[in-house]
Length: 214
Image (cartoon, rainbow, N blue to C red):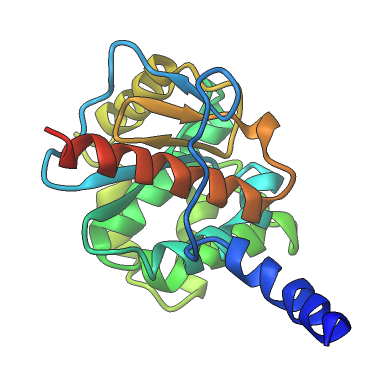
């Protein structure tokens, strides 16, 4: 009987500790997260989780399936948003514009993962705007509509604002996750992408408890 109990415990423990299950341990400032001061703008009716990323980042490409699946099953009081950053690199700024243009044309859900695949698996070179437009057309999207959004008057402002938010959050690289505009998850505290999301959930729970305590 003791052996059976030990076996059941060994099987069930990982499930209890998996993201989204059980009770997350209280995260520690300076260890699992750093405070963002002053805080980033964040909605008051939701606990917002922000992923800073770039299509040009291979780690972001690897992380994308995991965080996408996680974001699809968030509780109602949590929202998720992604911010593409360039770190003032012209080639990454073009990738940021791809994200915002796909978002504007309604093609993001269809081509988001495909951009990562094109860059990191198929070695597609997005060195010019024309190369981007050609690739979008090859995927069956409206290239003219995309080009108009990509070259729109407000596009540069969006890219600059994204980099400003990244700078204000003092991220050291991507992917990086901010919670409620106030807490930056410490990537070095995570042993895996799943563990990074576990820490994120613990911080979300911290914010939730703070709000209920008011």
